[in-house]
Image (cartoon, rainbow, N blue to C red):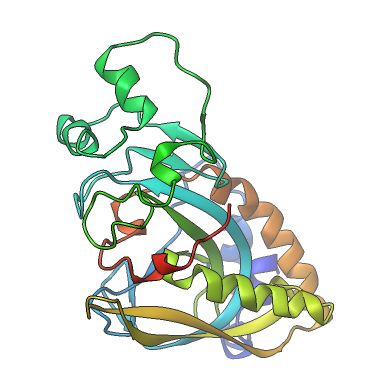
Length: 274
């Protein structure tokens, strides 16, 4: 049985027939058949304290294994534009500007107090493009650069955490992008495990949502994390294999419009480090 099957809950594993197992083994050979698109989970807007799936199902909570965590950043110049970010970083440090920016994105970006350097290059059609933009020095990542509404002291480019999560009831991992409001909670949880010589990917975690309000009174949800149990030796070995399989995916998967929703900048009272 493959590593993902090992991480499936016991009930599902028992109910698999011999034919099902053969089909699963056959599927492992299908790498050239299609590009895998992981299912998405996101924190629903409006402070409803639920997660939404791709199929618009809702989950109040879930328990599973957080296989991978990746720092990221993304800059959407328009508030809720429903477009891919104008600039994004898969490691939180190296920003990649869109090669096909929309005219409306450029127009929105021009409203910033200090414009993203990629916008200047696009407008002047400069051929000397850098391989990447340094997020640490980029004006969009500085505090007080926010121009999309909300807290003016915030960052225009948002710090994010992309998590690959294997829910106990799902057969394949999902991608959950944590907005700035939940980053400090996640980082504190992962750090607390290290203190006890554990790793976030070597325990089962229960994830819930708690309500909060911004300084202006707008409701939003913050993720909360709690250890739900240790993994068996077989599960830990399977996690290491699945992490290897998904590492390149999370490092290269393009960001889309659903990875962050501009609801509130209440979190930006406290800086998020690079």
